[in-house]
Amino acid sequence: MALRIGRRRAAGRFRTAIGALVVALTAGAVVAVPVAEADAAGSKVVYLTFDDGPSTAYTPKVLNVLARYGVQATFFEVGQEVSAHPSVTSQVARQGHSVQNHSWSHPDLSRLSASAVTSQVTRTDKAIRAQTGRTPSCLRPPYGSLNSTVRSRAAALGKQVVLWSVDPQDWARPGTGAIESRVLRNVRPGSVILMHDGGGNRGQTVDALPTIISTLKARGYTFGVLCR
Image (tube, rainbow, N blue to C red; front, side):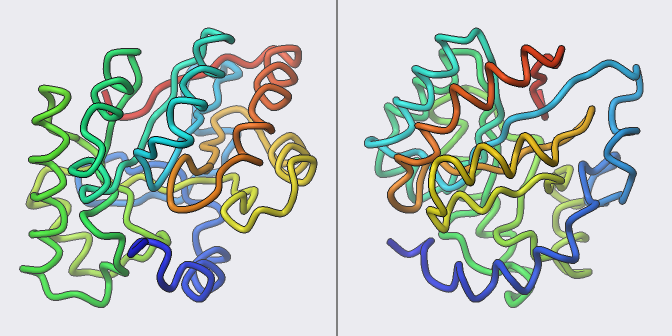
């Protein structure tokens, strides 16, 4: 699958730089804020996000877990996967989740020309809109890779740039227990949790979700949705 290419190489390159980056507050901008301050109301809200889908194998399983616990999430979807599995994207939207833009083919956008970045975003917008009736308002650049071109193109297209603050590296399949502990150890009010429902075998992610959700609920957390 094309979106797997370069994942391990690029992930390490950007992970340190984005550790404190949570959510863009204006189109095209990314603001570094302390995670505990990300929720202005001061309530214990966290945000589950899923990248690289939709996947016929794993997205429905993720949706089943979320439905079981009454939790909504934000899905950053790859356009070519939306095109390949349109009914899964429709299912995500029907169940009340937010469907947002994660580029067309999962390249490092910072290595592309402005016109190529625009194409990656607009093609994905079109595919998602055809299945959900909504144009995504947010962009999550693959690998968290940003430069002035990506920022300016995002702003021109009216997109907020959304990264994350908790990364359990579930894409590397470190084990269900490792995914659970990495999330639960690092989560704070306002945390944006990065997980994956596509791009490879996501069985460990699916298996980790019930413990993550039930434990956070027991700690008094609620779950918010980004980019409505």
